[in-house]
Length: 132
Image 1: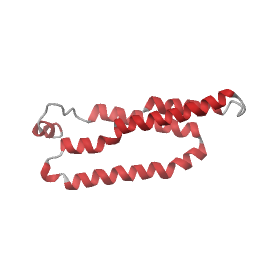
Image 2: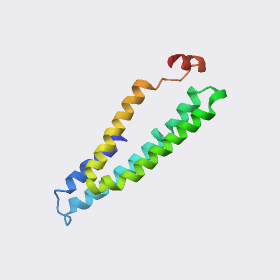
Image 3: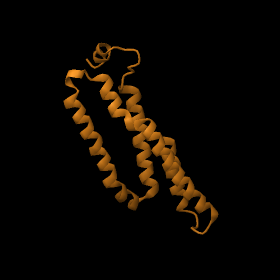
Image 4: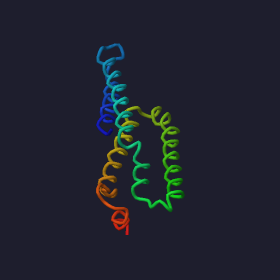
């Protein structure tokens, strides 16, 4: 996701210095669209399902209701926040918008690598011990 967003941001930055009539401008437009499509596919295959996967693996069955509701609320809240701010950011700077999205994606990958426990082959008790 971060690499595709970086490609999109670079293509937007380069488009600022190229004449709209040139072939390179059209190519960069296609690269931008392809980068966004790759990002959407990568999000769908990876980070998009992360809240539900983590919820199902780390929460005991008897308390999944409230934390699951909170995780869903937070997920939709931040989705709405991105949707509301995207046009404002794009009006400010297209390249800057996707640079910010790239930075957030890199931060998220680091957060997941450091703080989200590996649950493969572990019991629920072992996973809960990680959080104590």
